[in-house]
Length: 612
Image (cartoon, rainbow, N blue to C red; front, side):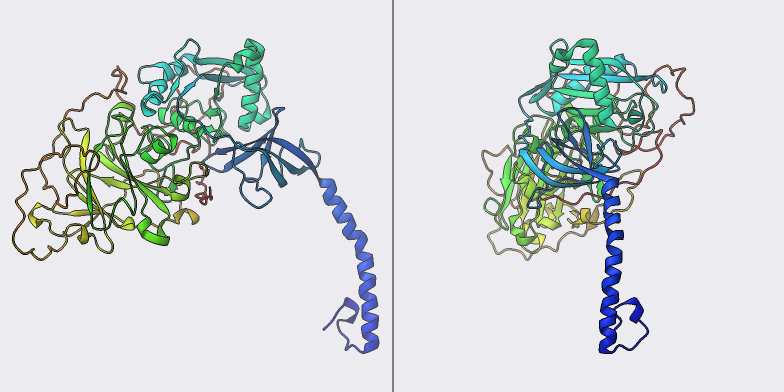
């Protein structure tokens, strides 16, 4: 085997081997200066500094944004989420110090690599109840070489303060646990003009926030800014580099919005970004982020889903079902109220521990009704029970942060029987009560087959079909997802023939079931009932007014699917007229590009962090 260039083509003797070794030593000695020069050149091209500040995370549709905000106001871009000395991810909101390696000659704020991160102060728990928010909305315009107009301040103020505005929307969804201050100046909307600079044109959100706060403090004083605990920034018109409709610290106190109907003028967008400040992540459907249209955390215009309400501390469970409280083959009955009625006992939480090692997700059942904060919920979910699942390691521990991947599995209609296969659950529902706001529900878990839960049931009283929520690949978010469809539709519901009737039981026969009627609300737990309610003609009962609902709006409800378009305002004569008119198309996830931005591919689903 050759050991050096001069010896490649010769058979080596012992003398040749000695000569070859000498050649290798000479080559190495000659190469050392070159290697040293390369190392020195690399050191010249980059520099490392120790920086300290608060770690922030922002979930954009195109990428995850990690930054370190120094006390001086400088924002350092990080290539990824920092890890501590043992390799654990450091949660956002922590105060940290790390080594930032940046390009030599740059301003040093873009870290090419980070090392030696350490937490100097742990992230504080996120408070999401008993809060009164004092919000300052800064509507930004640009002056100088790149003049950009702001959206009308009056329109933004009206979006918050009208009867059907964002203030009442948050109050309804939180059942009054989080509200905007109703005192004078509690929600203040002002316009400020800041000098044009390249960072703002490139949609650097921290440059927008810093420039706006400097300008406002010069106009109104530092004490004016200190009187608020939430800050929102509405971008100027015509900044095409912003590939999102809304952005927020997760958690934190800052939000940013595009000046469009899908941005600052969309109540779902505003609620989503506001709830990011409380540590709530996006809603999912299958492998698609933002695709849960039952919640503002996806792409809906309604209140949070049941798992999100519970995580926020805004609502409580009617019952917690696990191995000890739901034995196999035993049917338990409940009367489930709609989440829009009030915060107490409006959901069922299920920990399917009976799955053994396959137990990775918790399940929530909640009835949604088009009233109160849910007045704009879609037909897919109105008067139906929504079924959600999420990562149990996060859901079972308030101290764990990360994205739990709250995912809509499907819906359950009244007077139906649904087999949730992945969790070995059979759910049966009756008809609504007189005012149409509560539904009777029976739930049973089985070991092998759903028929274990209906033994002894009169076949004539069973519904004609049993719908099924199919098994789901819980690791879908670890795979590279395809591009989501433009128009998201409810997943198909497979239909199965009714189960084969069990052999008749020996006499005496049980007494016949009386005519169907809604059972009274159990107190505290009803006696198990293995019977299925027979179907009855559906009707549309009148809904009783919700105690959390504001007075009726003088205008029709906001449509769920709106084409992105600029707000109604007189075009700025100084603004370029080359902005293309957005075509009418189905709604998109609210962190997708606005109408002036080029189309983007969605980012892959983030891997489940051992934790938002």
